[in-house]
Image (cartoon, rainbow over all chains, first blue to last red; front, side, top):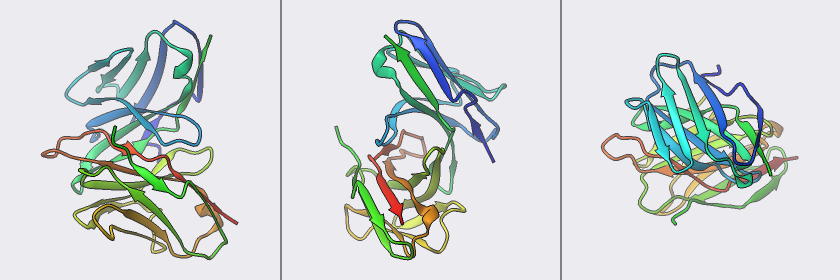
Length: 114
Length: 116
């Protein structure tokens, strides 16, 4: 039951260029979406989020776009830096039983080449 | 910056033994979670906890699993009789919903559980 999918397991980008990471979801009840960054042997670190009432949220070099009709979100990193190299997970959630549990995608490994 | 802390960082246990994974959530957070990530797979939700009771649990969270908040700071995950397939990274997380509005959850560094 893959409610959240990241179809690209890996992505390589040249330093200074744009990185675009994609995520698709199937459950129309999801109303809050997040991107987490993860290094090996560490916990996920929150990057940026977006509520379903918005279609764009920007924070510095990171922008998340949400297309609700297509059930698609993307993370843009501009400009990409070598320190951005990590695994990026998108997560989706809906308020159930009073809490927001996250459904994670399988992750995309981003490699930024110097 | 406040953080979620987990101990131990690595736990090796024999199959059939009980393990307790410990977490100290961020102090003013009220909602607590356990997730796990089997090597090479995605992060999976196990259980959410609020007001001293389980709010929701996944199919993975069977009778072998339990959670507890024994005091004002710790949040524990117990696996009663470990199986080989319980080997994974276990992540604790906490957040602070405000009037039902979502906020991001903060994750700990994880405990790597190895069942041999």
